Structures are given as C-alpha cells and as structure tokens.
Image (cartoon, rainbow, N blue to C red; front, side):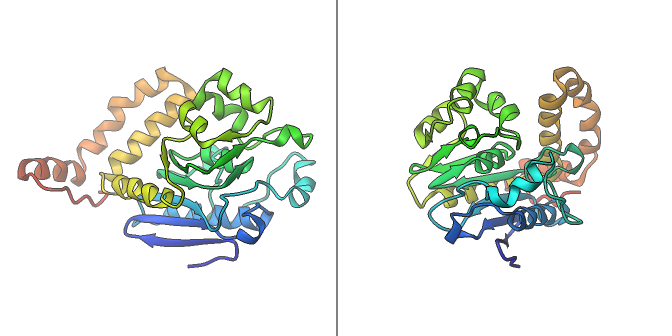
Length: 262
C-alpha cells in the first residue's frame, strides 16, 4: 500500500512506515505529514499489527520541516488538520495518540521534526553517520513539536538545554551517550536492527505490551501516584485473558508462546 510521500508495508505483525521523499531529503511538507498520520492510523486500528517501524528512504532521515509550507499555519498557532482515521505522529494529542509501540531507525540528517518524531517513539536506532539538530532557534522560531518537553525527560535538563539553546549538531555517539538513541549500528545496518527489535516486541503478549505502554505513559504524563494506583486494577483483565493462559502453558511446555491478543 503506497501513498505519494509515505509508504507502508506489513511484515508479519510489524507495520513498516517509510518516508519517501528522498529527492528533498525527506523534508516534511503538509502532505507528507498528513500521509504519515494516516500510516499511524493504520497501525493504531489494524488488529493484526502489533508494532510499528518508522524509517526513511535515501541517505537522510529528514532535513526537517519545509518551512515555506508550514509557516502560514504556524503563524496562526496551529498544526495541519489531520484526515479521518489518522493519528498524531508527534503524540501531542493524548486523545489521538498511537496505542502501539513504535521503533524508529535513522541515518544521515535527522533535523527538527525528525528529533521530535524520535522523541514520540519508544525505541530508537541510529546509524553511526547520523547527525541530529534542533535548529529552530537558528530560524527565528522555537521547537513546538514536543522537543522542549520530551528531550529533558529523555536526556536530562542540562543535556537538553545544551542542544536546545545552542542549536549545535549532535553526532550519533553523543546521541547514544545521552540516551537520545538506544542502539548504534554501522551505516546501512540500522533498519535491520530496528526491525529485529520491532519483531521481538510483536512476539510478546499484545495485551501485556499495551498495558506496559499505558502504565509508563501515565507515569510520565500524570506522575507516579496515578500510575501506581492503576497497576493492579489494570492487571485484572490481563490475568483473565487467553494470552495469560498461553503464556503459562508455553512456559510449562518450554516453547515459544503464540499470543493472539485476546
């Protein structure tokens, strides 16, 4: 299934989402952003899909926003309207956020919105040639896709301010050191590694994965106490599931579990 600037492909229970505008270094215009939201919507709604993998065609993940296209909207203080059945790729709308894990693999340039997409995903893999940059203050604006909120959560206040307030480039080794990415690979190997992680996630019990993601997000957005209060209540339906029975049976029989998400 293809769209003009974003393509999707199912690989077992993993949905591979690919940015496909390499001639423009995968710079985001409004159409590309909307296409990406539809791809996220497919992952969110398709019961056969358990994990997503976000990658990009070409030498670069993204050179960032196509500011000429975005400026009229940003000057009004709004993001593009999203199509029906789509999901906010930046995860800023808690009422319209992806309910399944997303792994992301990057290479080359990963600028502005690229970092903010990265921060909205769950596990990140970078090729060793990746160059990151949150450059908005060099363009007279500031990051509004989540970097000012999430970067400090991921890498700490000092590390976040070091790069948000200078717009300095972050190389792949530094990104790994501060925790912006979780895995480094040789150039060209990042997608293989990320797909392996996504496939591993997709083999786990879907209800358990969803509950884990929900619990962690609740702790991050609302604090520890609300998350702690939900731990045991949210475990009850999981304990009653077919997947729990299969998990126990597979342990007894010493085989890989075959979960169905029920």
